[in-house]
Image (cartoon, rainbow, N blue to C red; front, side, top):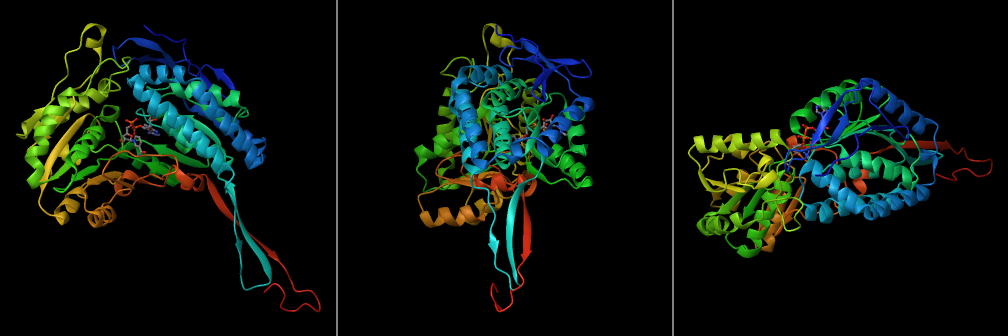
Length: 496
Ligand code: NAD
């Protein structure tokens, strides 16, 4: 069984014990064994981390480096991620229960790509000349916002921290990162890789611990200039209101409950692949999942029949087996939530087409938090199981008759993160994509993502965009400079 040395906070370029000396166990969700212990930071550690980040921003070299130099360092981070891929895969798999193949192909590779993208972005931050009708030379500069408090959730620890830290560093900001309460491994490992790549001490600090202690202290700290939050809508709402009291700019990447529309003219084979991917990917613990399947009525019975046959064949099992597609839920609290929603569906008279229970696992995996991919029909569209974010491998299926009805059903939840549709009618694809309330819409597939494509939510899924050039904007602000250019004698009118 894998175990690591006890973890330490990372502040001002050094590993250190938390001020409280308190620790919590980090458990492997595949079999419940203790991997290590993590420090439970508190406000005193946040103070120390913010002081280091503040110094690094106000006096240190990082914000003052030529953008190209920052880009070079970020390129080295990407190379180090690939060099240390095995260690990162191992950490992400034991911490979150991710299948190793997923962790390697998606998490580690995407993190490397995020830093590469950030390296390129670093060199694109610039301003613009503005021509105005007064004798002057007017231009804008983009400058880094300052110290960023980055708060991330449990489901993609490495990718989501890389997204925020990469873009923040590209902009010239410094960072205090708070990973999720129970998935600290990759964040603390990455802090050392960043240092090895040449990120100066104090520029990236990691404080682990609970949201109530570390997260709250970060939100309220006067030395933090911006909050970049990814997590649930409930906590995001709280975080935005606390940041609002302090007039701190925020980006909010929150929950989702994506609708996946299949029209009767769709290519059924490719739609089925996408439908399954959209709800089992990362064991359904995916903000951009598509857990609400909406099928045009003539195709309903056929599609449900195919899912009934295909879904039980999705390999669920040991995350260390390269053939595994669905690993355990990331922990007990996540498993219990899924079980409660499925029990609710049963109590409402729904039909459980497949799954609906924990699979039987052998040996140490019997202690793991596994749940079988589950397909549910015959639920009212108003059911909480349809309306809320279940965040597990659970798909609900509803029928629609017309395009207008499909769009109305798709938009009838408070969320608006991702959506998708399958059709062979090109005009319909564009029409429906425009009508869906979501930050990203996929046509004839699901989860096509790249660091160059901005993503973020609408409605209760948040605001602000990460990925793409938009990510740099959210870590910079515009400053206007207007230089008076009075006309010289004998030169009236010049420069107007
Ligand atoms: P969560 O909201 O419980 O926690 C997110 C982070 O907030 C954690 O680091 C947590 O410790 C911290 N936190 C908790 N209380 C806090 C407080 N009072 N002050 C400050 N910080 C606090 O979310 P989770 O369960 O870790 O992650 C799952 C959720 O994240 C889902 O809703 C999912 O949709 C969402 N998510 C969204 C995106 C996106 O890009 N939109 C990406 C991944 C996950």
